[in-house]
Image (cartoon, rainbow, N blue to C red; front, side, top):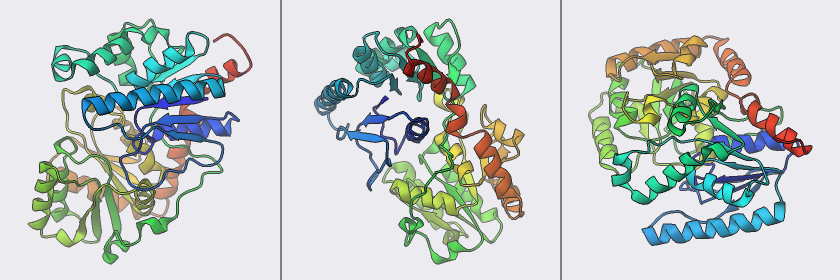
Length: 385
């Protein structure tokens, strides 16, 4: 199996989860990707190949050279592996998959991100617009199209004029019998000693107004006294500077820890230590926030956390499955009340086991990848797909 991804699995963990499931089903997956922006080493584990094509950043000319190198590496590894099928995760990698397969191999397009191909997008970046437009126009050539939520699947079908709605494969980790976790020692020294007691609340992922981090930090003043907040990904942006300023005036500033982007092993260790995960998304006109499909929901549940999230499509399933407390508005009072309810629930003896069951039976790539696995297993025995 060959998996092409412009974004490294550090920032698109469902790609790695899918590779783990393929390995479990006796395929031999190889991931071809650009370098991670996070520090630390990425080890995919036995049975999963990982080819790093270097960074994809810099000037237009530098990014173009990086994509040329990616294409060359893809051609070489495709010739060596002669894969059963090619899986792509973005417009760039999908067009490359079609070029490599030439209609002789199944191509699976797992549309991790959605884009509006319109005049505004054209003005912002003509070359990106053209690539996205070409991928959308050629989506019918994919053997299987999958999307990370029902809402996105319907959006893609309408936008690309598909005859059928793509399969839904929710973003989630792999939870197998042989799942191994990184050493929690990678987290040592990052958290204040007082954070080891009480209820630990975390927000991993992007730090911007869309995620309501200012309101989250402000809400801590009203949290139960033994709760602590950790936010990762706080950088040097103007918004992050505002977050730091809000922290300085908080009466609970000793219970708030702002961290920069940390290695993935440390982030996973932080999630395993935490009790409540935050996933706030401001209602917006952008497709990604109008139809959310965040990776961190699955990771939170795998770590047996209760979740505080915005009331939006897909996220409302958390409440229905009794693993989430939802807020109608990103407002400090509402956030604080939801955190209070979630912290009360995680103190109960049975809560974490209940969350673990929901995670294993629902947001588990071994379950979600069923449409992809069915196609690949037919292809592996030579059936027409």
